[in-house]
Length: 101
Ligand SMILES: [Zn+2]
Image (tube, rainbow, N blue to C red; front, side):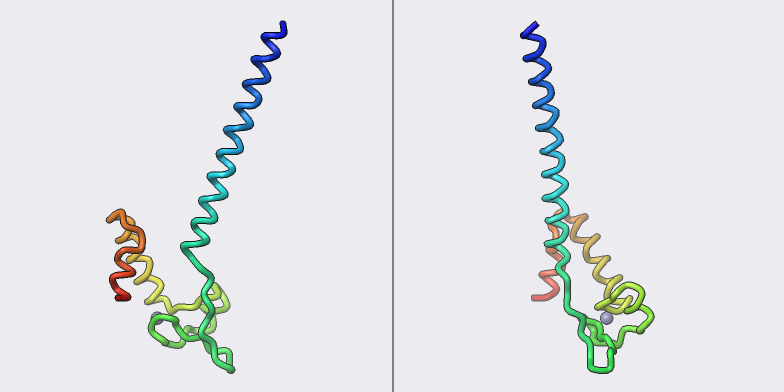
């Protein structure tokens, strides 16, 4: 009898362990993602015009309102291509840092 109770307790503990590990993993993944996409300060003038952080073109106000954009559509799509490129090469951000240097 006592052996059975002991066994049940052990499975309970291991279940909790697995759950915690999954939660930890999810937490560290979201933290990792947040670290990869730092919040960027918009380049805004006194009139409320926003300028693309990459090419300094004025971002259409509708776009700023809709997605709180800090970059124009062209630069965002360029960056997305870069991200895909560096992911497929297996070196995250490699292409991007080469470009900056
Ligand atoms: Zn731009």
